[in-house]
Image (tube, rainbow, N blue to C red):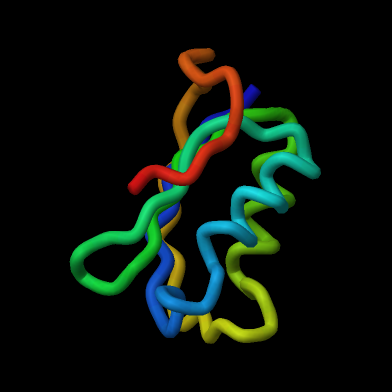
Length: 88
């Protein structure tokens, strides 16, 4: 299993991006979390066998968003998550 930490920039808040990421992650069997950042970005930490596909999907985002940049950091999975949730 792999772990990825994403920070997504662009028009990604107020457009349902967090709920969309949660749905994508759950469909792919990934666990972790997504949250809005104070700088206008969205942050994602995900683990699973298909995190690479989740990264690809996040680079595009839902149709109502505009992803300009995605900072990506890879590491080994810790196994600390049991589901994928939105953090408020």
